[in-house]
Image (cartoon, rainbow, N blue to C red; front, side):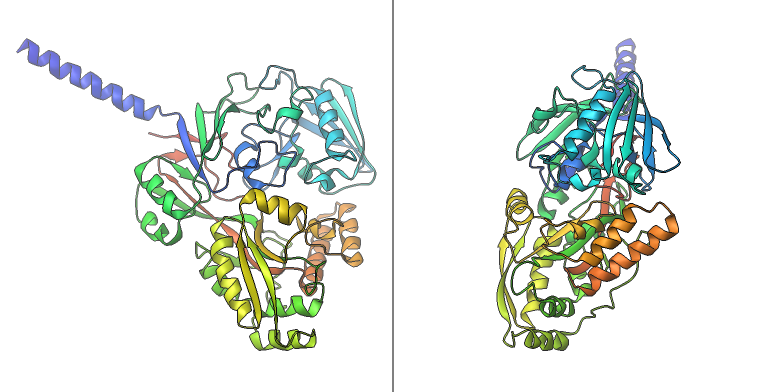
Length: 493
């Protein structure tokens, strides 16, 4: 009998130990659709970089919170001069980069001067255009003087493109990123995953997770079995396809349909014929059936938009009626533009389902009015090189996930090739205005200008379809910025 008791007692101990181990889980595998081209958020427009590294590994003076608010980050506080041109930041003390080097005011000066330099490769260089001087007053104080007041300055500093980097490691961040965040870089298995581990020397509240692996899972065919088997425990933006209904009924998972800043558009090369003709662009706008595109975009979710602005923003104007779906009107406009029999063009589609699946629907709709599209699938790196950088395209479909980024329509060298002095005037006024009501008015004017000009085919706001293990807490339901912030994520019992 003594032997039996010992065995039973041992089994009880083993069961208790197993339960404790499950309760204490500290690793997480996060599924992402796109692999980043590299790991430096200050050197690329690719959202996939920020989705892994923003707030987790790299930090800025400020940061954007889960509700879109501006929060302190490496700057613990700041003061603004009465004329709105001088910002004095008090930096946090005791902060070090992951390689052990000290963070101080010189790193801030280096980062901002580098981002706004003439030879800067920062994809959002425009964010820093209002900066006149950056002064390291002392190791814990930075004074930034603007050439004119900028109402969005603190918000701009919270973008991933404005994270602080050290001169010692800036040139090697593409392969070996060094930041100040709660996680540090462990390894990049190219084509597969990026792994971060807990930073034991973090200046703030330590992360609950010891390790986070961001695994590339490009489509529903791979995502569904990975989720159901437990190989991947969280998809902040899941390519679920038709299987979402099945997942929603499974109590093991949380399904959160949230909002993003992702304006999904039929991007148009306004500098290339025949798209330089506004009647052609108006014809395309009338040929697009938004509801049908949303139904076939890979998820079936999305909010119709008529301009480049998020419906979640208080300044949003519903302009979907500017060019309502009207194939007959589209054909008439093409005839007026000199294309009574239509024309042929190319449609380059990057990997996400909203582009590949939605592109098939768009091509079908344009075919009905006489526009024959050759669909060209491209990988994300090819899209960045051919379309975004070299403007070698007719049409493409992409979701612009940067926050409040309507200002891109005022950039001379942007890949849309759109030029409108009146729009630029509105953007200049917006930059100089801090009054909230006036800013809303200017944002609404800007929306109306690009809607009337049919710069792009404005289709829908990309939904955030988050799916994760029901025992996880702290995941973001919405995406006010292109990030998967894991700083507050933890496993519950």
